[in-house]
Each structure stands twice: as structure tokens, then as C-alpha cells.
Length: 384
Image 1 (cartoon, rainbow, N blue to C red):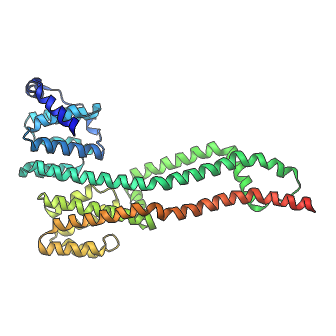
Image 2: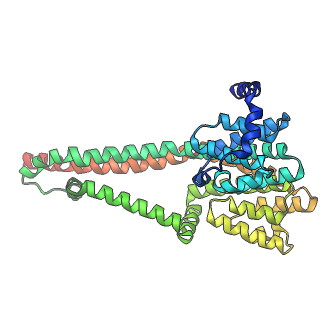
Image 3: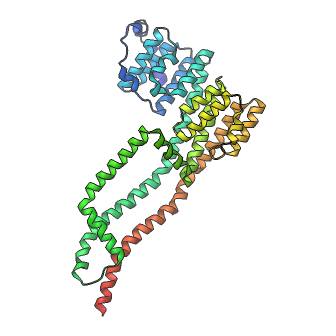
């Protein structure tokens, strides 16, 4: 933040600001491919925080964008800011210009900024936006961090097993083959796996990689297939609980912030649906929006969708609707689910560790038995 403040001071110290501002309407339009630039959640958060700080400090929005442009890294981000500056110089609203970059900023950010501009509370709404993006970033980072340990252990187990099967075990096999000993079933299985991987290991790797890539493309292209996968993940024992808590936290916080910003419940629910990655929950949010459009209370609709919305959420929202404090209730629920998710991710390693140890023990035990059993058979035949 100190570097940022220093850059702001340096920026205002240069006299070329006025010339840049006056010349900005004559700038060339940014190329179309800049509209496909994507900002990470962290970049969006910094954009909202810094723009809010500048506007709150009575810096005109055009000059604020010039400052942010100087702070940005990468040609794509520079072109985005150039286009925003050009549009603002010609008298457009910020949210109207940002619509050109829907993939860059997202529907949630666009609507928060739109409400802020039209109601004269842009700085306040940018703070809301920055806080929301920061919490989303932290949630994703926490979940990713919790999954690192299980992934590393799994890869290490598979790597060691593959090394033993492909390189070590084949060097021992000639000794067994030279002796007239009937090999155990586990050894025959390991021998067949070793022979297959030696002959077709590289081909198998590329086939599996191609299948994985094709599946990823199908999921990305087909909403029906992606819906099935999203539903399946929600039904998984541990992963499903984490995903449900994550979606509930995002749902309550996003809806609460949108309502607090002055949006109608129907519009807010549609925005929540647009910004939700899980297609199962997106379908539920769209159903909520339709029921709200008919004048129904969302708590009644939620009560009919118990598998996806816990009873606590339904009851608390019903209280919020009755007392007229729905936005505050939703933000309270988001904090509750975030704390629950925090506990789940902290305990994830301790939950998965016994399962991983069991799987590792079975794999290593299978390899050990496959190697030791023939040796035992050989010693028995020699004693005879």
C-alpha cells in the first residue's frame, strides 16, 4: 500500500496528467482481443480496493483510472484501462464501459458498480465488492491448500509403486523364472502389470491424458454433462460437504451485498445465479428468482429444496423476511458458513490421512507380498 501511495503522489507531481486527460478522447479504440482479458480474483480485488480508495480521496474517476493503468502489469490489463479511460472521457458511465469486459470483471462486479454509480455510493459499493472478492479468494486458497497434502501423498504413492513395478520388479523376475517354482497369484498379477507397463506404458500415459483432456472439453462444452458431474460431487461424502458449505457461503454473502446495495430480490437472485459456477445451485437460484418474481417468499421455496439448502438457512431467511432485515441476516449466515468451511478445511487433512494411509498400506502391501511370497516358496523348496 505504501508503494501504491508513493506512485499516486508521483503521478500527481507530473504535469503531463492534464495533457494525458485532455488527449484521451482522441486515443485509438483498444483492440477487440483485449476484451477477452481475464483478471484473477486477486486482480479484481485490488482494482476495487484501489479505485475505492482514490474515489474516497476525491480523486476524479478518470484520473483514478490513469493511476491504476500505471500500476497494472501486462499488456492486456493496460489495454483494458485504456479503453475504460477512452469511454469515461467521452462521458460514459464506468459500468457501461466495463460491460465490454464482462469476462474480465464478472456480472457481480458490474452490477455492484452500476448500483453504486446510479445511487451515488460508488466508493462504498467498491468496498463491498473488494471485501467480497477478498473472501472468495481466501476461501478458494484455503480449499486448495487443504487439498495439497492429499494430492502430494497420492502422487508419491503412485510414483513409488510405478518405480517398483516398472524398474525394480523386472530385475528380480529372472531369478524367479530360473527356478521351477509356482508363482503366487499376486506375483503373477504384478508381473502382468509390469510387462504391460514396460511394453505399453508410454502409450497408456498418452491415452489416459487424451481421455482426461477430452473429458475436460466435454464437461466444458456440455452443460448437461457438467451438471451431472456437479451433482455427483455434491453427493460425495467429504467433498460434497465442503462444496455445499462453499456455495452456501457465497450465496448468502453475494445476495446480502446485492440487497444491501439496493437491488431488488429478483434481480439479485439472477445475478447470484450468473456468478455461481456450480450448475446445480445455479438451477436452484434461477428457480428462486422465478418464485420471487411471482411474489413468493424465498424461505418457502427454500423449504422445498432441503437437500441443497440446510434448515438453518431457511429458518434464518424466514426471520429476516419477517423482520425486514434480510440483507443483514444473509451476511450473518455467510459468516457462519465461512467459519464452518474454515473448520472443514482445517480438519480435511486429519480426515483424509487415515484413508490415505490405508490405501498406501494396501498398495505397498500388495507389492511387498508379490515380491516376498515367491522368495518364501523358493526357501521352502530348497529345504525339501
